[in-house]
Structures are given as C-alpha cells and as structure tokens.
Amino acid sequence: MTALTLYTDSHFHSPYAMSVFVTLTEKKLPFALETLDMAAGQYLQAPYRDLALTARVPALAHGDFVLSESSAIIEYLEESFGAPGHAAVLPSAPRERARARQVQAWLRSDLGVLRGERSTLVVFVAPVATPLSAEGQAAADKLLRIADSLITGPNLFGDWCIADTELALMLNRLILNGDPVPQKLRDYAAAQWRRDSVQEWLAHGR
Image 1: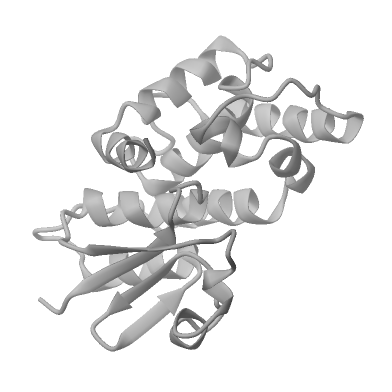
Image 2: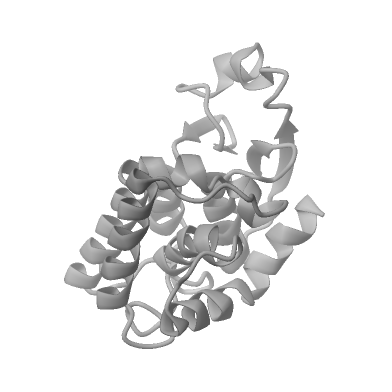
C-alpha cells in the first residue's frame, strides 16, 4: 500500500488532527507521523506551506497526493479504504451518514465563542478558572441541547462513527473544565474517551 503520512501539531492539541488520527487508527491503516511547531509558524513556512494546499493542520500525504482539511481527509479515507479489511468511520445508511456529516460540519462552523473560551488546552492540558461569558454560556446551552437530542444510546447511530469522537471532544471542553453538564452527556463522553484510538492520541500528547 502506498505510504500514508499524517501531519499534526507537535503538542497534539488539534481536535481536527485528532479526528484524522482516530480515523486512521480505527481503519488499522499504517501511517507515519510528522509534527509541526505551530507556535513557531512552521505550518506557514516552506516546505509545509507548499505541500498542503491550505497550509493548515492536519494534512494527509498518500503517496504524492496531499490533502488538508480534516473532514475532506476523513471522507477520502472512508472512500479509499472501505470494507472489507478496514472499519467504517461513517454510517453506511444515507440518512445517518448525512446526519453524521451534519454534526461534523456544525461542530467545525458553530460554537466559536465556546471554542474560544474552552480551547482544547482545557481538554489536553488543564482546566481554566475563567467562567463562561454570557455568549459562551449560550453556546454551551446550545451544545447541550443538541447533544441531548442526538444521544439516545452508547453511540449516535448504533455503531460507533467518527462524529461520536468529535461530539465527545466538544462536550469535554465543558466536562473536563468542571462546567455543569447533564450526567447522560457526561457518561456518553467518558465512554467515547475510553476508546483505544482516542487513548492512543492522548498518549502522544503526554
């Protein structure tokens, strides 16, 4: 198989790189890791700037093909390495797959205030003492309301999919900071966080 290389931040704090890492791991695809010093702006400098079209993290190199933007990478891996032999990371049913993609797109494009006030440093490093602003609390309330309506079992759509990991990460921005979150959602996020592929990612950042 043509070699796969995942480019990620050197501290393993990127939620989007985490999603691609989990996808590769769940599919049992061998891949190399290349890390970039984000604080030094390495992702904006050659050779990475010229390698990855959007000069953002993560990027995936598959031979001489390089793709950035995590949702595009995940769909590429799903389409290129499907069953048999590689686990699915998106639901197979069209409506459930569409809903999973909706959840992914929403988590990337909405809740910006919450992502600012509860960055992934809360998840991967340590909590912060600053309370949520009124706007941050409104975003948190929206997250909790939508998550509660989506979660009806251990996973969103019966079998696990990558949207489960992404939703759990967003919930953990609140949970791991000690912000109030209903027990149902805490239990869901904790179960998702115990997944082996997630634990492998967390081990890299320690």
